[in-house]
Image 1 (cartoon, one colour):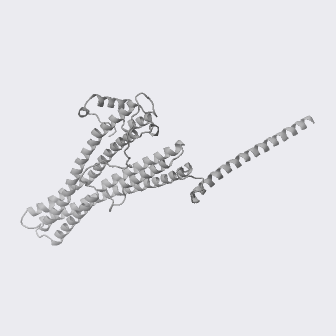
Image 2 (image 1 turned 90 degrees about the horizontal axis):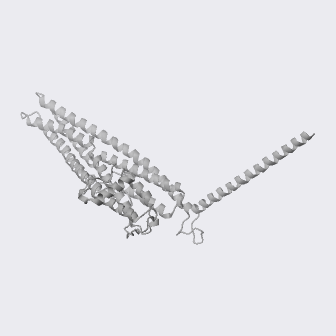
Image 3 (image 1 turned 90 degrees about the vertical axis):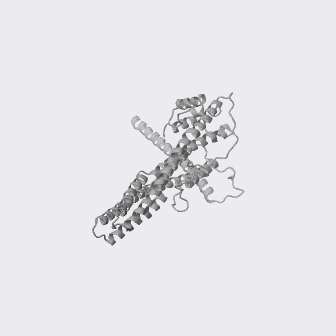
Length: 405
């Protein structure tokens, strides 16, 4: 009997415990559903309802939730651009290969036909016209290809995809840190997207970058910073948001090295690549044009007509292979992009140093570490570089700031 009573008591206590836990679980779930519902309704009201003067949301201080939604929208647009530039980059790289092979085949076929006509005892007018038309076709195709520079177009799209991917990672970092998203964060992200769109346009007509500029300048894919008066950190204060007077001086030395050594070196290399590309771009069509003219007079008693009908065609194939097979346009764009990278690093340092409010700067220690990594150096190597620059004249420094390229 006692056993039955105790068993009944245990069962009743167990039932009470399970029912209370269920009620507690339901209560917590209801609270969570209520919070989620309020949060969702809050977003929907702010996205759908028009703002008025009596709204609780102040236009001068927007809700961080709305800013977060805006940033997610920008992130989606950037992800779409990454895929778009990757696909178009692959397409234009294939253009380069197909056009190169097609033009070389047409040119060599025309040279072969011209040689057959020259060795034939009774030259055929049809073969002569065929070789001439093929030379003219390759000339027109070469002119178009040299104006477009498919290898350079492909490199532009690869750079754009990489930079958009980098911007995507920056936004992911901003969202994952957990700090409230401000209007300035949204505005800056929009400006970066638009600056990249302008730096690497997709259309070929109207907005395409000049492939043979009169002046070689670094690529610029970031929004320009407004110039401000700089404020030096006091030497007596060793840590203002990771900044100190010594660190500021080191950063100023790094900007001078980047400008005078790395950036100038790649501008110089870019000028050489551009000059070579211009020479090759002119030589190819000229050679095929001479060959087309020579092929018209093949079959006469003079051997010079045969030479002018065959040799320039062979030379044109060699020139075309060097220019587009060697992707000289891509090399020029790579040098221009590298010079732009060093200009970007220089302006990033100057932008931080120009900020009067030290607390609004990026943390000095973090910024120094990021700069060292982007230049392929450790912190100690970066400081040794600055010490070497300080102890010698600018012209005597042989070392470049970057060790990556």
